[in-house]
Structure formats: C-alpha cells, structure tokens
Image (cartoon, rainbow, N blue to C red):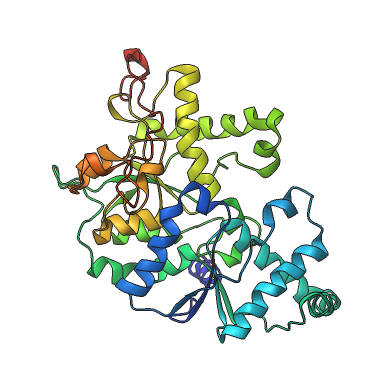
Length: 362
C-alpha cells in the first residue's frame, strides 16, 4: 500500500489538447527532424491543436546554467514566453527541451515560494515589452505528451519495437535527462526513482527495457563539462561508463528524452571508437541512439530520412533492418531538393580488433 501511494505522488496531469509549443535551440542543431516529427505526429496522426509560434525565443537556459544569464533576466525571458502563450489564447505550455522544462519548472516554483519575485518579473516584462502574462495551467515536456498518447500511437502503429526476424522484443536502453526528473522529481512521470516516461512508450510499442547498473547515471553533458574544453574528458568519461555498463545486455538501441543526452551518447561513441578502437554494437557498429520522436515516427511508419536519422553519428540501418523497415539507402544523404548534403564519418570502425567487438569483450 505504501508503494502504491508513493507511485501516485509521481503522476502528473497532462492536457489532452491545445498546446503552446516551445522549441529547443540546441535540438534544432542536433536533431532538426525530431521537432518537426513531433508537430507532424501531434497535428496529423493524433489530430491535436498545437501552436508552433515563430515569435518565441530561446529560454536562455544554457546561459543561465553556465552563470552567464542572471536569474532576473531569465525570469523575464520566460515571462515573455508565457505572455506569447496568453496572447495566442493557449494555457497548456509544452517545452521541447529538457533544460527548458527544468527552467520553467524552477521559475514557477520560485514564484510560488517568493511571490515578490513574480511581481518584479511582471514589472520588468511590462517595462521591456509592454506585455502581461498568465501562468500556464499545465506545464509538460514533449516526452510527457508522447507518453500520454502512447496507446493511441500503438493502435496506429505500422511497426513494433520487435525484431521482425525472430519475433522477440527489441532490447532498449532508456535514458532520462537529469533536468527532467532529478531537480524537481514530482514534475516528471515517475520522478527520479521510478521514471516511466520512456519505459511506458517502449513497453506499449512492443519493446523491452534494459536494466543495467548505470541506468540512472548522468550522460556527462553538464554544461560546464562540455562548454569548457578542459572539462570534456569528464563528459566523455561519464558516457563511457554508461556504455561499458550496458553493453553486456546487448541493447538494440538507446532512446533519450534530452537533446544533450541523445547527442552525447551518439557522438561520444564515435570519439571512443577513434580513441580506443572500441565499439559497442553488433559487428563493429555503435549502438543507435534515438530521440523519442524518432522512435514514435518509426513505429508510425515515417521514412527514417524524413525523421532526420541521417544526422546521427551512429548508423541506424542495423536497427531499421531488425524492425523490417523499408528505406532507400541512396536517399540517406539527399537534401530537400535532392542535392547531396555530404556524409559524416561513421561510428563503424573498419579493421577493429576482434576482442573489441560486441559479444567478444569477455
């Protein structure tokens, strides 16, 4: 009974429609297809009202967490976002970025605790822009929304998270961003103790979550860890620790709900392969790393290149083959006008010593 009551504390009410969507500044650089996929899935597949407002700006969260943007400044920036939502006639605010979600959550909690700071922010916003705002009725991260509609997506599925050759569930590592569940645990589904936002999607779509020792370990991004060049060794060491811990469990892919986590778990695999000659996937490949929108898009039958999966450092074709997804290899690096956009170095390490290959590391 105690456990059941604890679980209830970590649930959250998620609005069913009419979302004001705040894009992420870094996601548009790392995985530009994911945000478009979210909009397409919500509007076209699920028939929901979502406003992608071109007036909104970065939340300045990276600058705030790097001690460049002061607290009063970021509060005013966030207040402007809420004013734009208010002016558009929406009340359910949805953030694409984990850091933004953490920032909005922190500021709303601060205003609740210190109302004089909210009043000062309102004054600053009006002086700067002439705008006023209402606080959102609900605040959600985009992974919350995808979780909310997981069963509806399952009913519309063209593919499952299942090995089409064996019929066995795919083994999936889910990674939760720190700013989603660790700063304000009760703001995320399941909190930091029982995070279920990604696991719920995986299970509903036919996959099986991998439980491994470093499952809740940070990916190592940490703004000062990467933005300061001298600290990047700490960043890659954290990702290395996670990858080394998960590899004995033979995951088919990794999915993350934070843009930084997805980027680092993907691109650090290439760096480790170059540094050590070590790869973590099958046959000398890396382990594909997906965003939850990409995972949902594959389940719904979206073209992997339309989802932007060619932007990954680790090749995704082994996963597509397992899922029985048709794709055009020749179209992988073609832009919107059919122009070749260039091909990045792959995470495949040719000539890799046998003892470093997946399944032969013991």
